[in-house]
Length: 250
Length: 250
DNA sequence: CGCTTAGTTGAGTTCGTTCAACGACTGTGG
DNA sequence: CCACAGTCGTTGAACGAACTCAACTAAGCG
Image (cartoon, rainbow over all chains, first blue to last red; front, side, top):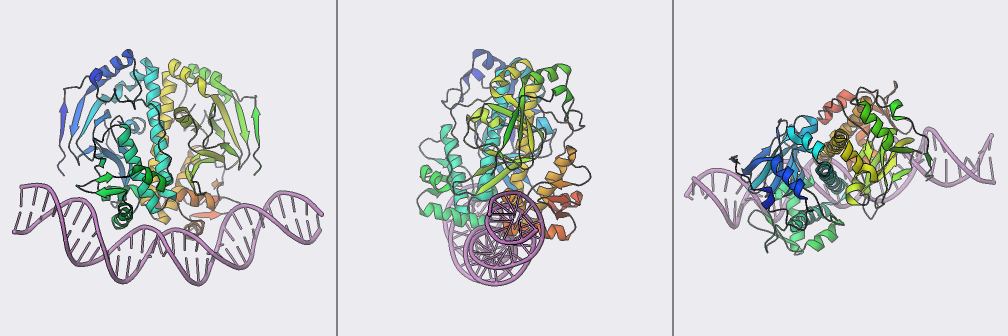
């Protein structure tokens, strides 16, 4: 596993942040933007497959995903892995380290990922000086909680077919909100990732996905999943969607 | 289902809050305490089995559990239920309604529950005036996230026996932290609740729990579970515990 | 060209489900 | 006070979903 990371002192100026113009995100005041620009310490670029954060580590940093796909996961001692959620542009990672001291999960890149780096020590300053941004961080944490609730419902109570349909529909909706698809609706994950998210074996996952692809809802190619019919996947899963309007990020 | 709720204008003064003296909670400054006292609008007392919040509702309130046990859950249209987590004294409920407009899950009481009632509208004041309390709310949300991560790992990757052992150990540890057991280590849940938490059928849950009780680790009686050996349950599940030191609450 | 990774498929086994029935206990109304 | 219904826990039997094992194909890369 070639873990390569390049830390740039170079910073994309927050004023030119490629995420802010997206209709999915809320607008920020000049003041807020200025504060965040000073809060940001640099950028981190990471290859596909490399580990961004590792369980048990004490990281002095918080990150916001600027570009790319990744996932959070936990492992049991014997190697069983559970993927908890996926990270995409705008997502904040490392917040849990703030409350628990050490990370309780690992984070890995699915594609090349670039991250904005913040110093955890300065988080209290944000709370002191910018209540609106403090509220945003709570908002982001509560949103993650909401997504985990839905995943829990999925793994606990949906059938294998429903679960698979839900997961693909979920990733598709998130990618769509972020305008990540340029024509081809492509999600850069393997069936092993799907299996480790759904709590199924790789073999059974494969057979389940086959049923979905036979119905013409998706297609596997080039180490990833192409979504052909997101609406039908949602219908199969019985999932209502994220139902979000505008969303903050740091 | 007799849903009875009594709203008291009567308030336990925050200065006399029965939770604050517990070693499990962090200490608060006089200023913080004063603000929370004004933030609190009243108390709500609810019977065992009654619904505190219902999915889809728009509630103008936030609650902190003052006493009692309960649980959060989501349901699928055909009635399948997934319990997401349990609520106990010190837990904040209803925060998700702040970000999503409507509740995304329901909350039900397992025992008589009493709650401190806050007005959601005044939450922003808290963020503006008391950064430390604002940070606490984020802390609480991040803690919930951490617990959900562990539940997800459990349902997704642990065996039925490990799952059951984990859940009982988890509830036991939380109860112990809060000093809820006076001699008898009793958790007021039915096997149906266990089943709906673990994503198992009631029948298989019963057979799995039997194995644990045959090993002398727990005992069922009077509509609940008596924990006989929490350490061994933790060992079976491979769970490391919550590993918390001091914790805030509102 | 061999090595690795990802996806596919079949066969047999295990785990967990559904169906069904029953006992213990609680609360309620006649 | 008893009859009755309702909830909760328990158990056996049969079935089905998901797992493991194993072998194979296709593609990518040094």
